[in-house]
Every structure is written in structure tokens, then in C-alpha cells.
Length: 335
Image 1 (cartoon, rainbow, N blue to C red):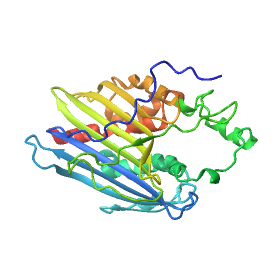
Image 2: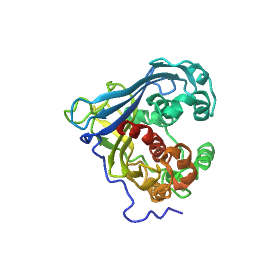
Image 3: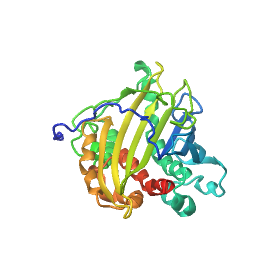
Image 4: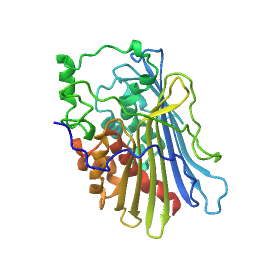
């Protein structure tokens, strides 16, 4: 049975990814760019992650760089890490090599200082799982129609894979168009989006990776500023890829607005807006975000998946929300 999607719950189209920076604000940006050693998605993948925190002073003078990290990772076709390094260098990253499952928990266990301090490197490390999960999407727009494999949606192996997907998120709930339980699944609904950066602000984003080859990118921006007794949070999240035309194509994009009490650290208001999503059922995940109101934002790394499990959430929206756990760390620079 098809899913009954509530009226008005649909993607609203690409957001403005780079609004003007507010005076007396903090901006965290990050990107993880994926490329492959050959034109084959089954070849080793190279990840280049960059993340930076800047402060925009009250007087509007040049932005102050608070922290910046670069992460380089090689993964095998099974997404297992085979090489990893960072700039500035961190000791111990090699513990993540050849790890088969449990990457995020191993990161928390092995790098408690990065987690506690909410560093840009921790954001990049935590994002390896999500970035590698969706990276194969980049090949969609580079493949010639005649090269597309012929797939029988009723093949027993394909049906078995579909069954494993049921219930993992709003977009894969029973009856969802993505599963194609009664036939071919729906095609991904993607959109052309602006290339970063936008505008003339030289501090808007950190240094960005550019390529004309097949590449996937996960982008984030988190802006934080204070209004009276609340922190205001404006966040942008996007999974996108390059295309032969030169256009950037997005498959996931969310924006999030939140207000957080300065004293308690509790969320007083929060809203997630679906901007670009692949299937009609995906935006339904935003209906449950209100559950995070009244919760401590510093605990979002664990609370989000607890309060928005399965079909009540979206893997990518949840990742966008989890990264807001470091808002108090960023806001501390405004004191």
C-alpha cells in the first residue's frame, strides 16, 4: 500500500547556502569531497575533508579563524578505511584503519578530547560514515543511459535487499516509492544547486576542492549568534555531486533553524526544512523534529537518533541535527 504523504509536506527547493554573516557570530563550515582512483565506483575512494570555525567581530572587521582541520582518508569499495591522516596531525588515527563496523563509537572511544572540545576534526571524523554511504550517488549523472545495468525489480536478490531497507527511515517506510514493492522503484528526484561559495565574502567558506571529474560532496554550514537570552542557530546541510555539464546536483538538502536558552542549553524552538530530497516520503521525517524541543542541544549526538528512530527520522536529516551538539562549544566564543 502506498504511503499517504500529508499535504504540504514536500521539498521547497534549493536554499541560499551562504547568507551574509551576522556581526558577533560564529560560523562553522565543512566539506567532505569524494573522488575515485578510476572511473569505476568499485575502485578505492579518496576523501578530502575540510572544516573551519570563524568569528565575525562586533565591529565587522575581518573574520578571525578560531580553528581549522583537514582530513584525508582512503576507503576501499566496502567503505573500510585503509589510510587516514590530518592537518594539523593527530596521533592515533590509525586505530580507524581496517575497522569493520562501529566507526562512530570507535571515534568517540579513541578521541575523547576531540569529542569534548567539539573540534572541526571531530565533525569530519564523525561524517566519514555518512559521506561514504551516499557518495556513490555521484555516478548517477555521469553514466550514459546505454551503460545503465538492466535490473529486474522482481529478482529475488533485489527483493531481499529491499526487505532489509524497510523501516530504516521515512523514505524507506513500508509502501514507500523508493522501495518499489510492486514494481520499479521511483527515480531519485535531484536538483541543480548553486556552486559554493556564493557572493563576494572571502570568509564565507573555507578553501574548497574543485574538480571536473566524478565527485561527491557533503557540505555543512552552522551559524550561531546571540539574541538576548538565546542562541540563534541557522544551519545548512547538503549532499551533492558534480556532473558532465558542470552543474552541481543535490540529492539531500536541509536547512535547520533553532533557538537555545543560553543558561540551560535547552532547545526552545527548532524546525527542519526539506529543501531537496530524493523521494516524496522523505520530507515526512521533518514532522517529528519537534520532539527535540526542550532537550539539551549538547546531547544531540545521541539524542537525535534516540528520539527520531527509523521511519520517524531520516539518516541525513539526523546527521544534520546531530552536528548541532557542538553549538554550545561554538557559542562559548561569543562570551
